[in-house]
Amino acid sequence: MVIFEVIKRVMMKKTVVALLFAFILIGMLPESSKAQCPMCKSSVESSIEKGGKTGTGLNNGILYLLAAPYIAVAGVGLMWYRNYRRKNVNINIPDQELNLN
Image (cartoon, rainbow, N blue to C red; front, top):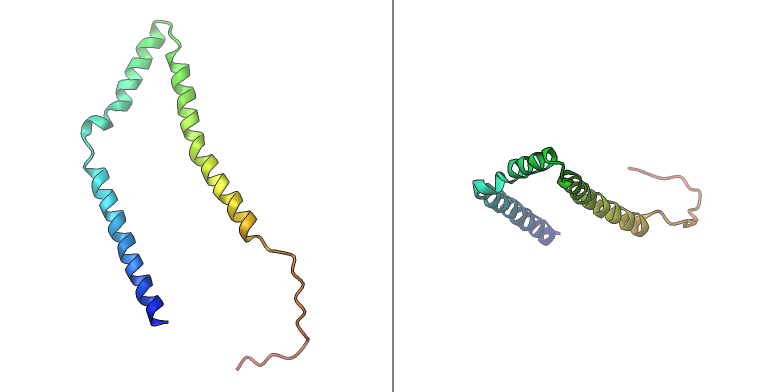
């Protein structure tokens, strides 16, 4: 049992270190990558003013990207439900008084 406790502690430490490393890497992203949304917005606004259809295509792309995580979570939930749902099992336990001391 002690071995399982040690393994559990080591795994927790590795998880914390991995999350910390991921946050540091995300924080080091260049500022130019954060400027992408305003650039797209200005390009779409100028296109709409000229009568273009770029805005509808961009909106459809955003909806497509938005739907992907929901579909993935629903798939994982469905797999979990199928694998771990309660089975119809008949358990024959004799009627006897339980001693809980």
